[in-house]
Length: 130
Image (tube, rainbow, N blue to C red; front, side):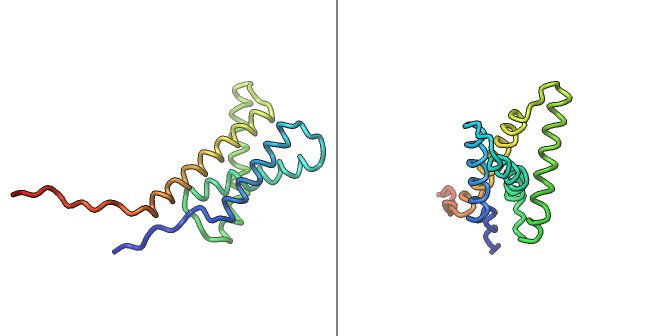
């Protein structure tokens, strides 16, 4: 028998993704003009997209996550920003919304895959041949 797949979305990872995403989105929606908004945006940009994509890839080594999460997040933000610049559609708000949607979709994919992996499959008895 094969071992069950590892759980990709650990509670601390999900908490970090949700907290940074909600804090940054709330402060952006309320148009808060303070260093708190800058810190929340920096935390979101450096953590959330990278952690969500690492969960999809099922990378669960803490030191590897520490190294890869900020670089993947910054790469995603750069690609989104460059794409919007080349389309003459750039604004920081649009980049944030696109990164937020990317993070949400990746998190939902990883969590749903983990839920399906833990659910037992029904046994197949086959048809009787008589």
